Image (cartoon, helix red, strand yellow):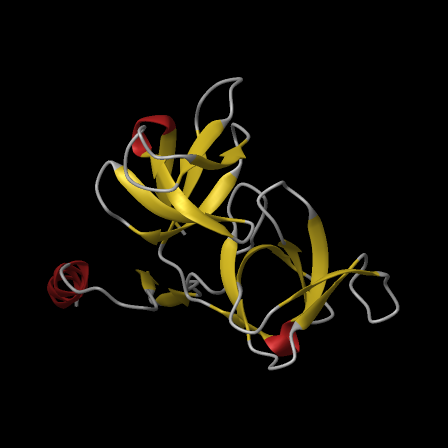
Length: 177
């Protein structure tokens, strides 16, 4: 049995799976896919508005919360928390403002990686392109996470709130969910 288990583990290590299973003395431990991990400001997710008329961002996780703004259909937004009642806490702009949206009208992407600004006390600039010669479109506080859209080498394509741009990975830590 041990020889077969080792062969299976070696085989699984060479294959990318969306769900991992851990073998331990005959027991199977539950593993999580990236869409099941807990989110936070340092480990955010990504969603897209599916409501054709737009999606209201509210001050609390309820339709009784005050309307803060609205997001247009197709807008990508940074998710920082899944609430227990089916609502999401989101950062809805590039300035660090938060609100809540109904999960019924938000498509959550299954992300693989996120980046955490690692600049000490300074903010990490989000640029319009891959290089310091591009304009600054947002500024991320050190320790804050952002979803990675596309890994492009030293300049990573990310979203901060609803602002898409690039960050230099010399000043960020890239992590797997």
